[in-house]
Amino acid sequence: MFKELKYVFYFLVIFLFIFLTGKFYFSDENKKNYYRSINLLNKKIDLYSLNLPILKNNTNDVIEYVENNVSKDKKKYQFWKLLEND
Image 1 (cartoon, rainbow, N blue to C red):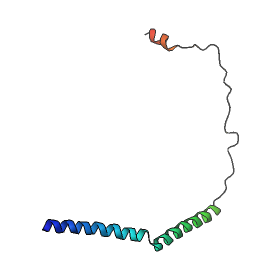
Image 2: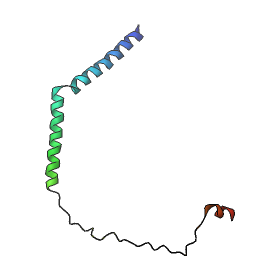
Image 3: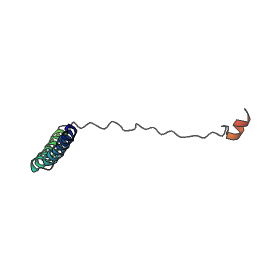
Image 4: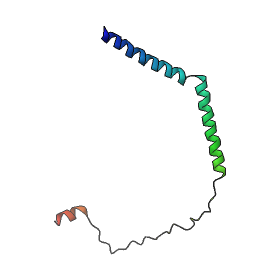
């Protein structure tokens, strides 16, 4: 008898939790607050972006290109011959 009451109590608690959570989540008040908070964040981002300092570009001529001179004196290694020498 006590075991059945315990299961009924667990079922009621889980059901109430799901019901009240869904009721709050899908309520119009929650949707309004959600959209208001998104709009406030967008406004804060816009205001903050207006106050950002613009830095001068100092990356001119940073990359130096090197010419690759392929010398003919390089020894060409072959994989199988390297294994044979051992």
